[in-house]
Length: 294
Ligand SMILES: Cc1cc2nc3c(=O)[nH]c(=O)nc-3n(C[C@H](O)[C@H](O)[C@H](O)COP(=O)(O)OP(=O)(O)OC[C@H]3O[C@@H](n4cnc5c(N)ncnc54)[C@H](O)[C@@H]3O)c2cc1C
Image (tube, rainbow, N blue to C red):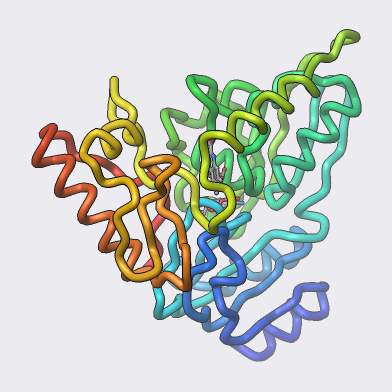
């Protein structure tokens, strides 16, 4: 990267790291170094960065809870939104937050202010930007259900998109090739707030059904229409199978866990094995939910 740009970004409050291990920035704890890892702390810096970088050579990372990085790392720049791009502001029944804000922090603010609508998403780790990009959800409820509008950078210019201008489906949105800098959630004020009980139930359910004691990236595959990917994997007898340090969780078939210094190669070998066995047995082609970054 151009030294002048790096200097300007630093003077705008960004932190810049060379050869930063991506394993430190994702929940799988897997991944080699990125040429550059830049923490972008405000919109001026984001706009400057986007003006000067080629779109093929950078990747925007949220909480890193839905990604698998390569063992060779990333040739280019990985950016993470921080500082002002993590702020959360409440205005009556709306919450405005930066794309880098943690979903759990937004939920906490909502609960404190008697705003309901987000509690169903409790226990989903990661950032608001990542959740909106992938239309994260719990059961049949998607985060798009509480979105009013989204601030995005397409190229280096910012636009606000109303919800109806964005296409959302199961774990998908039309926000590919854009950077989500802001999200406005539309919630409901209530005097009788039982959000805390819902959050508690959700967390208890997750503790019982998910292998949370090992690094993982959540569900590896999307559920095929009418089926649960986890149940298909379980029925095929694959739970507990290992390749190197990676294992198909014994607790939940749709989770792969990093039990001891797994490599991306180990995880990819398990993914291929599952895809092959499920296709052979059920003629169903599984689609990965996690983003595999080469
Ligand atoms: C234990 C566990 C449980 C989980 N449970 C659920 C669940 O119940 N439901 C569910 O839907 N998911 C679940 N997940 C997956 C994951 O937490 C969600 O998909 C989450 O919303 C991803 O957010 P993130 O910030 O970590 O995104 P990342 O993993 O950092 O990135 C995911 C994708 O979003 C893009 N992205 C991130 N930030 C931005 C941005 N600001 N602008 C544009 N694009 C961006 C990235 O480029 C990438 O393509 C779970 C994961 C774990 C580890």
